Image (cartoon, rainbow, N blue to C red; front, top):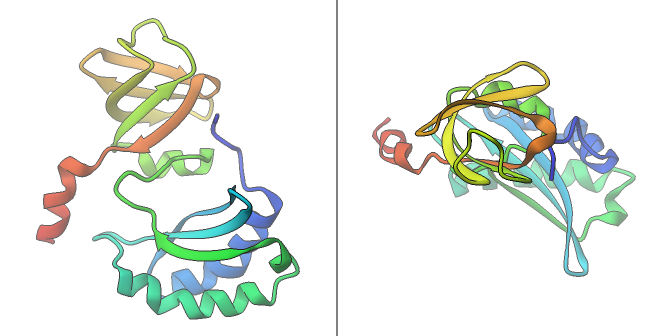
Length: 167
């Protein structure tokens, strides 16, 4: 996978089109994903807010987002539009998402077994990002991993779910 440095052209255009709507309603825009699944193309707008996103939250902005996307010149490429929560196991797929992820529990997957890591897939905490590599801390100690060695990063926040529900 390797972390992307930005959006593809459809994702970038969609992000520009919907960011204002998302932020006007008190949410943050976590990601815009344009992906082919089977024969269909999906445009996913993934939103977030401090105490989590509900189905009602997604529904509250779906109509406005749909209306704006319908006016875009790339609409002919989209079969399905989805507005959803970034989720507890959200994917960190762009470099721009790393600073907001510092301090979070993550599942880190690397392309190959790296010295200092017990496996290619580890649970750890993201503690730093310097623009070229991340620093993670886990049962294995502290390890720096260059972005090119990373195949995937997902949040691992299920341990924090009860805390979210208390707020």
